[in-house]
Length: 266
Ligand code: ADP
Image (cartoon, rainbow, N blue to C red; front, top):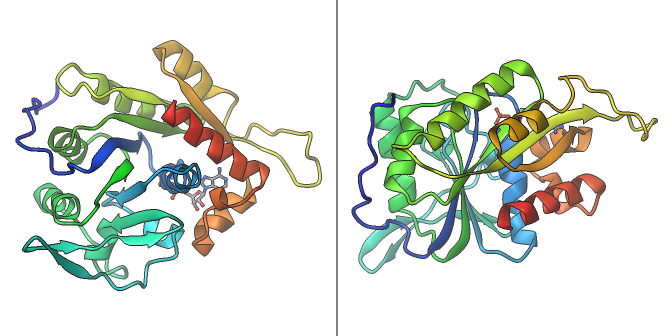
């Protein structure tokens, strides 16, 4: 069904990395980058060495979520190789495809160009020793996904979806791509994001804006683990906009992302 078959990776481009985890979604705008950023911070808070590569060529938002969009990028020479130095913030080493393009001009990546740029961010960067290397993948199912899972020994993917039917339908397609026998990447589980909304003044009430338990049902149907249900919370959105992910906070929401980190590691 898919064009590519998975060749044996020639050599491991990330010898110091123990686990490579893709964060993917069927649809855009469901909170994939928010989950990837907060999961990265949560894993760092749990004591792991963490890297985060923003590979979302359609809307790289990790630099903004980490407040590093204006940081200069340096190279360093290691054993005669010039390597990009990932930016380190909140205990996470970060690089983004967004660093390679002008933020203010719209970019139409052609597949081959995007793959080359991503390859450079993976193989020509000094990621060093990592317990978890997270990749914020583009939404949908594309050649980029296949290239990534074929060049890297991906440990597994985390699928982000809202409970809404259109998002779930696309999440299902994403899961089908990863579990296709030729691709064969384990799905670690589903994160139901925007699961409900609770107004600050009424902490006992839950409003199911996008439907109720949609991703819960999908996880049961496909026998995939439900990793977390994250509600719609203003502080998640504000944290993303201000470059300070909510997972840094000792709040209920911060705890929810620490719990997500624990269930991914499990
Ligand atoms: P994607 O990567 O899937 O395109 P983003 O992570 O960029 O989505 O999220 C889209 C928007 O929704 C962002 O403005 C983000 O701050 C906001 N958002 C994501 N998840 C939540 C949440 N659980 N509560 C509140 N806002 C959220």
